[in-house]
Picture (cartoon, rainbow, N blue to C red):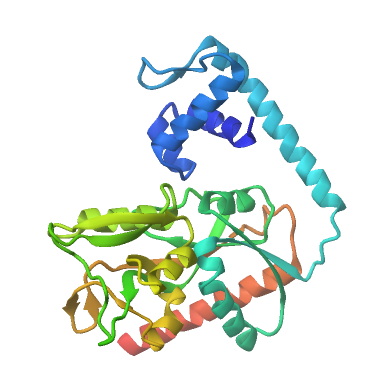
Length: 322
């Protein structure tokens, strides 16, 4: 039995909706349903009455709910006790970062930050988006770095957590270049010549954003899905070998674009814009200082610097446009 099954069950008891809980847990609804079914198989009883709407718990489910809450609370308390024994340096800033940012944006950002802010110690934990958010909400990290798009907001309580915007980057399709510098494959393809598509695994944040982008595109898109993974770097490696088209964050393809190993695979739409592109905001989150469970001077100093820098940049921008 996995503890996330209990977390899923508690979420379902609160929302009374499979689709809503799947969204909050950052998984697809089929995957969420399978995990509830796995918990029921472990318990040996139906826990959810699926014949009613909104969804409600069966008598067995009502019996399990307080037990699940107690188990999860005890596990969290035990974890906090263990963290209390950990010798964690007060000058070590701990980041929770989704894989797509850990390999691409984060290294460049830290290098630039050290030149402006000064040297600092950091520890990075690379996770999927859901687990990275959990690191923040459980008090297991100082800062959370994540993508944001208005259509797919993270479920982070603004009353407890505050946010800084670090800028934006683009998610766009790329493919290996041929001998003339043109993409081996290009969107939108055709019914007789479908584009081999390298996609993200079901439930991945970037994958859900790509799905939304493709659904909103004007005109038919002809794709032949041949490979999927939840990591952008894995898709980039496949694209570099010439397997197909992959949607990748701009920070992950800087070197490859300069070397002309990868090229944009979407049609030109304007002088500086291509079709099938979407802009994402890069955000940094932290627990509000008055509520934080593990205050760390180094993390606070870094946050204050970033907030001041952001305010100065905003002032300069307004000054130029006024």
